[in-house]
Image (tube, rainbow, N blue to C red):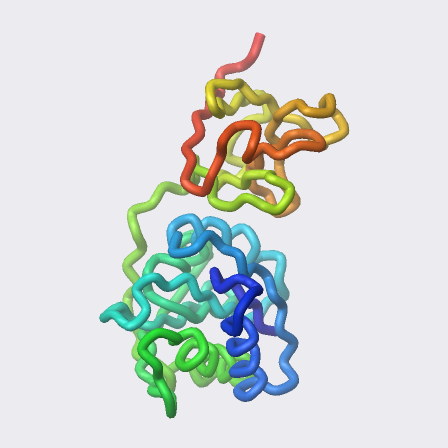
Length: 246
């Protein structure tokens, strides 16, 4: 299986061309569109977002990740094997959190050269072929790249920032819910938000935080937009108060 994680969006030709390349290099392999609206150019936010969703997929899945503001520069292409998952994309921190949370990982700098390599679309020309080959023949990694010691960024285990806003206006953070107690309060736009298990347990129009379906702390408003109510955007910071509320 192939999982796609990009900031390409669904408008325009880019996602379609990416999938066309995968159809050529991995015919018959199922392709799952996980995200194509990852916050553009935000490789750090994307790293925490991707790490939350990788475990949803079957072991052996190959993730093609393209959040690549440095395309065409000297940055390397990367293959990472973290536990039982493969990741292919730019070496810019995108796969750091998956690797950091894995029991074991290994990495390769991509040395394989495609028949065509444009300066601005490595997702189609380089990463898609490599991901396709790995999806059909995982043992080929050593033929596609040179083993390296991947140096991870000095990023926190949990990121107290907004990393994604969905079309409802719910705002995901880079914090795993298991990392903070349910008694914690989140300070957003000067307001204290308390935990609720579900939307229906708070009044309509009230803000709260909860553990979303992939284990992240998410800020929401029952039948409203947290992004609009609290003026949130990707990168907005949050404060966490963990003292027990009396």
